[in-house]
Image (cartoon, rainbow, N blue to C red):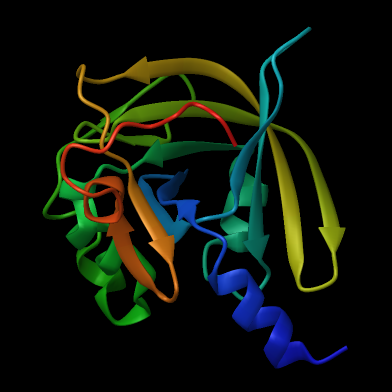
Length: 172
């Protein structure tokens, strides 16, 4: 298996962009993530986040026992960039409005949706830990849905992918 081919192939898989946040005492932490997905809705809503063990807040997430998945809109591209870069770690929570939900993890007020979660299970898989979060609160913010995507190594959005006036067929 050629690892570079695997990486090139994965760059073609568009993914929604979220910022995953948690608290360490009084200090907020977070990072941009594209590996977030729903697991189940019944009997309890669960979602998963794949976290690289090298991410600074990996161990903090495990200690805190909770996290918030903040689903970003196209308008939050700068937020995604700041939370993707370790050089901007010191200012990540300074330029956006935040609030605490049930778990105390920071919830981005400008997000499309916030999923406030308690860690249900953590599974180590090679270079990552898969966190299964039981959703304890969902905040849906605003009626407009224009998600931020990550594809081919860059941030993008649906409006730039679909030609003007094109309609989605609803089939895969």
